[in-house]
Image (cartoon, rainbow, N blue to C red):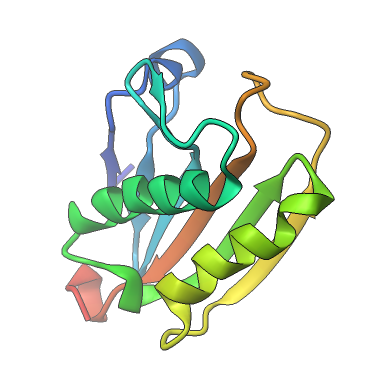
Length: 134
């Protein structure tokens, strides 16, 4: 595809399922479902706040490949396995985005590929004209 750029993060799931961590197309950069795994290690096991912070950190690393950061985020999606974790994940989101105020969708799901995962996040960011950082 012309004008589309893909970024890989090295996650083994990217190869298994055939996806990219982030894709830039036009003025949008989409970062797919991101958890707190770094390689084979799950960070923040049992801690939804820490898992959210690590997952967003990984998403921000993908955005950085396009010269973007948290201030450029216009949408977040939060997937949780337990209603009880809403406050902790919400606290992490507020710390990262309070001054940005992206639209946010929060969903409680049945589970993830690894039962230790409590949180998965997605972000969408907006770039300036012709794909330049804003």
